[in-house]
Length: 120
Image 1 (cartoon, rainbow, N blue to C red):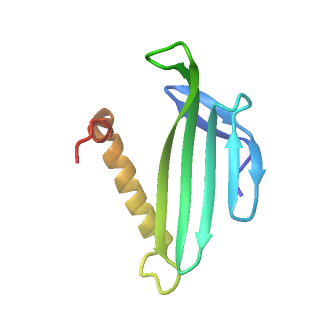
Image 2: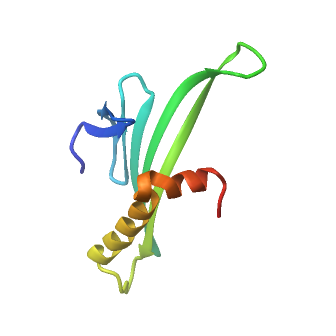
C-alpha cells in the first residue's frame, strides 16, 4: 500500500493528497478541496490490469453565459499484462512504462502537445 498522503506536482505546485478510500483493489487520494485526486487500482483475472489516474477538477463559466460548470481532466496510465505464463518481468514492464513516459516528456513534452493537437 502506498504511503499516506501522496503528492502530485501540477505546474510546479505540489498537491498533498491524503487517502480518502483504501481497499484491496483500489485506493483514492484526494486534496482537501477535492480539486485534485489520484486513483490507483488493479484487476486480476486472465490478465493483470493496473490503473494509475490523475484527475484535476475546476469551475469555469460557459462561453455563452455566466453559468458556472464543473469540468475535469483525467490522465490515465494502464499497464496490462498476462496473468499466467508472462514472458515479461516487472523490470521489463517498467522499461516499457519508462519508454512511454520518456516519449511523452521528451523535448519539453512536445509529443504530449502534438497528441493534444490531435496528431496521430
